[in-house]
Amino acid sequence: MDQLIIDEIKRIVQPDNVFVDEPMSNHTTFRIGGNADVFVSVINDHEVVDLIDYLKKNDIPYYVIGKGSNLLVSDKGYRGVIIEIGSNYSGIRIIGTEIVAKAGTAMSRLSHFAMENGYTGLEFASGIPGTVGGGVIMNAGAYGGEMRQVVYRVRVLTQAGEIKMLSNSEMEFEYRNSKAKKEGYIILQTEFRLGKGNPEVIEGIMKELSAKRREKQPLEYPSAGSTFKRPEGYFAGKLVADAGLKGYSVGGAQVSEKHAGFLINKDHATAEDMYQLINNVKQKVLETYSVELEPEVIFLGEFA
Ligand SMILES: Cc1cc2nc3c(=O)[nH]c(=O)nc-3n(C[C@H](O)[C@H](O)[C@H](O)COP(=O)(O)OP(=O)(O)OC[C@H]3O[C@@H](n4cnc5c(N)ncnc54)[C@H](O)[C@@H]3O)c2cc1C
Image (cartoon, rainbow, N blue to C red):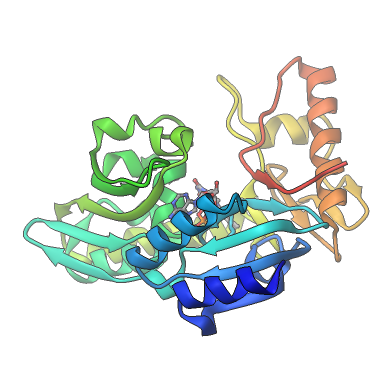
């Protein structure tokens, strides 16, 4: 990318948080992905607003990420600017009856904060390895819980550059989707409304869920969690297993032997390995059960 553009970006945000030719494998839980032209880790709303305003005015492509725990980035990387709303953009406060979290706050940190302060409702999120922003936009969920059950209001930046407060119903949450996702809004902050509970009981539930994850999920390998959405009336993992695909691999990418819903980076997988594996699994399940699997994982960049 042109040095003048990089210099301008460094004037808008903290220059120490701007990285050129940054490997995206360092910023995704798949541990896969080529270089982003520029990677910026933002620290506050002003940086996000000013940076996006500049990038839009200059027709420079950008993409917002959290912890990259639901992303497959191309081996060719990303031509443009990756904006990370992550640990540099985190913080939690209690205001009245709400817990307010900045978008880059880790969901596990938020769940533990809620537990320590005697709030119940976020136990399900304690093992989801993403940020509040990524979780809210995806309506992340597990073990019967979903973000839509606990979100009260969300502060977003719209494509038109306006900051808006959306209520829970205005977020139009759906299974792994939301209005903010469809409209390309950026999540800046979220207010959660939770019930009061006993911290020891809440901690007990969190420990139980975390033990279930360790028992059922291949957490020892890089992945993006469940690769496919749950098809109506089925479980993706069961379909993949029943199609005989447990352990099936393309290059270094493999259908986990432990949980067939997880496609893992078994051994230095490339993005193309994973992309091919996803397509082959989709094809085989379609042929065997006439069910079309839809990836939950989001693809970024060019694939063959
Ligand atoms: C081991 C493992 C277990 C998992 N278990 C679960 C689970 O139980 N349930 C579940 O739902 N998911 C699960 N996931 C998937 C993933 O953690 C969630 O989808 C999570 O919500 C993604 O958050 P993130 O911050 O990593 O987002 P990213 O992966 O960085 O981004 C995902 C999408 O969100 C967008 N995004 C991120 N931050 C923002 C923001 N601030 N504003 C606007 N858009 C934004 C990105 O543009 C992208 O489109 C799991 C993943 C792993 C690796």
